[in-house]
Image (cartoon, rainbow, N blue to C red; front, top):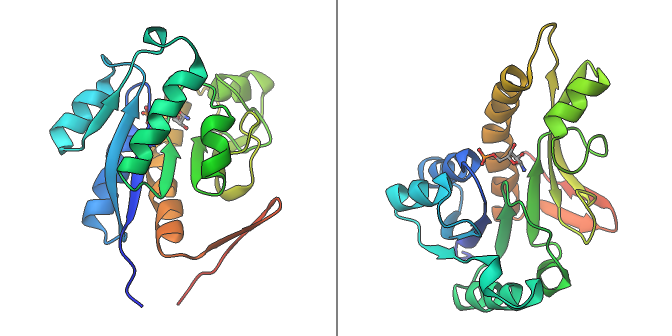
Amino acid sequence: MASSRLRIAVFASGSGSNFQALTEAVRETGIPAEIALLVCDKPAARVVQRAEALGVQTFLFRPKDYPSREDYEQEIVRRLEAEGVGLIVLAGYMRLITDVIVKPYYGKMINIHPALLPSFPGVGAIRQALEHGVKLTGVTVHFVDGGMDSGPIIAQRAVEVREGDTEETLAERIHAVEHELLPLAVRWIAEDRVTLSDRKVSVRLGE
Ligand code: GRF
């Protein structure tokens, strides 16, 4: 049965290098999906310019214009439904997400995190890893649950910490890995290879 392409909304707050890498990979490497929407809480962020350059429509909002987090999240959900979004990708979205979004999209929302979870969750993961002195860190793509970077893990890749690394040099190598791993995980989901049961994610590869 031919299935229609998966419609994806990316949520981002900052630079958007992952948004751009994912959009290009979807368009250029035959992932059966399309980037339907960028959701951004910072209308002046660089990611918004990237979306315009790539011709991706945007939903921009300012949290302070709403009485509460639940209010703007309800508006986001209405927009996602109107767009027929089947997968949310959090790529540097710097806000907590409540059950208003988590509940209806559990198993349909993923996040990319710049560390090997469960080590170094939360903000500043690259700095945390350097300060701790680990020799190996990396990248994790996981489903989003109600906790902080705590959901079931879909894919991970290691990145070595080198002698003399600074936050900038390590971040550069981590971002390069992110730009490959996120499109790969999205491909698996779009090709319906991913099964989630409790905390365990299995991926059917090679057919
Ligand atoms: C990435 O390191 C991602 O892992 C984290 O936020 C950063 C976003 O970077 N969640 P960019 O905006 O995609 O360049």
